[in-house]
Image 1: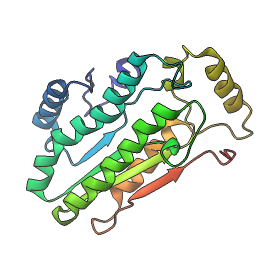
Image 2: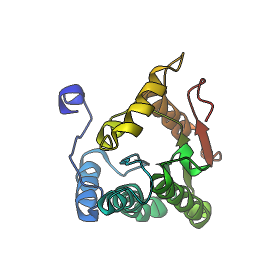
Image 3: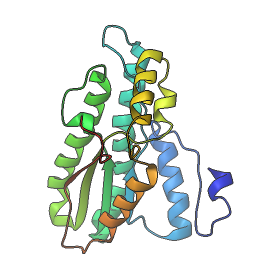
Length: 205
């Protein structure tokens, strides 16, 4: 990431473990000292391990819940007090299409993303009168490294990879989600997209 973005101006790149609140808080403080108060938080960190519940490892369960759920809570905790004091801010939580339905071999991953959606809904109610907007984005399959990280289940990994490669228009790309985030952030203060589902035009599941 530093190779790709390090030469850009007005950017701070920090390697942070989102499961550790103190690391996230320290990174935010450093960013705010340089660039001013955080006006938009995008909780995008996530890990994926697929498989049947009885076949998955306990450490995979723990990792998904720690990163996908507590990572989101840590990010929110870092910025929320300041946003409430300023009576403005946008929080975008990246959930998943798996939070909207039942998908074979994605039970625990889907549960972690359902938690993200629930956190967004509850938080939105808490801050509705504070000028803070909370949006949940539920993408379908996006071509990122998250699948590579979970390829311990080779059969599931190969199936998803083959399926994505067969899509006529290809899967969603990270920049598609980035464009949506920017659109959400640039909306007038009076407007809040609460929940947004986005998939490849070819995705039918």
